[in-house]
Image 1 (tube, rainbow, N blue to C red):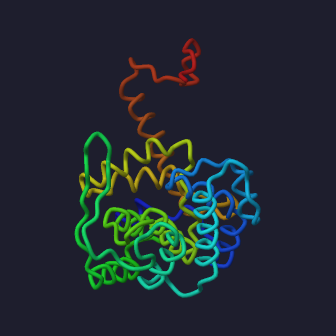
Image 2 (cartoon, rainbow, N blue to C red):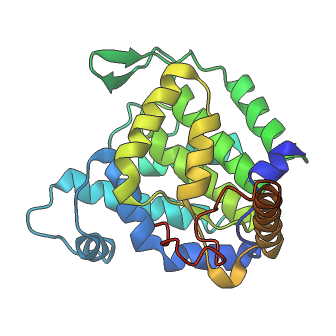
Length: 273
């Protein structure tokens, strides 16, 4: 019960609506995801490349990253079956086609991630049966919301480094496949929050505790349409707000000597910003 309350789905699309919402935002999604590979194109440049034209000054490697991410998004929005490990392999085969040692195959040797400041994370060796079992268990858990499942799979896959390369891109698209299937919107952390996000990712790699980064992503990286906002979630927020207001009023009633900020009865108080 606690899991469901902690990560209630913010949006309620049908799967078909969520697919259309993703397709309508391909440029923004690809533009954001490409930053994993250090691609610094502008949004218009990204759109131009996705339209099949070259852009002066943009390296061929960056162009291929953008094109392959577009193909990856096209792939996940065309699949009607639920996410499987086989599907994750195909996502990796597409998005990491130009940079993985063996695109689409699970990592079979040692890997490593540079966390900066001479800090290095070495992920565990990959067991295909364990990864398949993990994914199936998460997707079948009736106590988890779609958003919770997607965030859990995304960060598990990132840290496990299950593929030779392209793990963050693959994990992000795999998680969004779960979001789309469940009609919960999309996971897309805005670029102006990436510095903080990268710090949280590095700390998660060190600790293997995803609670903090899941909560942060839930608060900052879930996107959808207001018309599809979850009314049940709004109801929970309204009830929480009313409960807090009641607690403040009760406190004021029992402590008349204490003036609460922004209390309309305190006419001489200045607003608190």
